[in-house]
Length: 65
Image 1 (cartoon, rainbow, N blue to C red):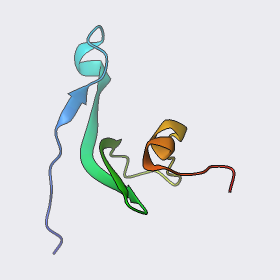
Image 2 (cartoon, rainbow, N blue to C red):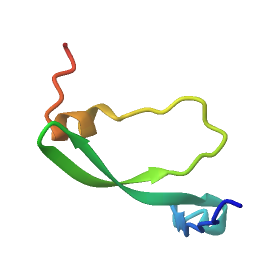
Image 3 (cartoon, rainbow, N blue to C red):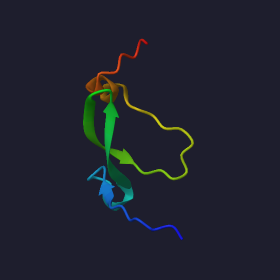
Image 4 (tube, one colour):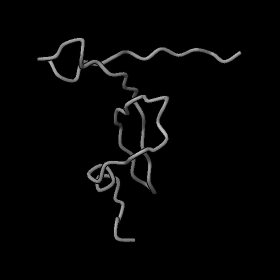
């Protein structure tokens, strides 16, 4: 049996309240010798993962390669 893990839902837009809550989980992204702590949207139905351009820059990624 798989162990279950629960993640808290975070309110994204205070004006919408509970309607804007989404599950985020803390993750550490590492590229070469750089690491950053970020929150990732937990989407179990996702078929595509996207790394935002700005996070890549913070990690030292050269996007032109």
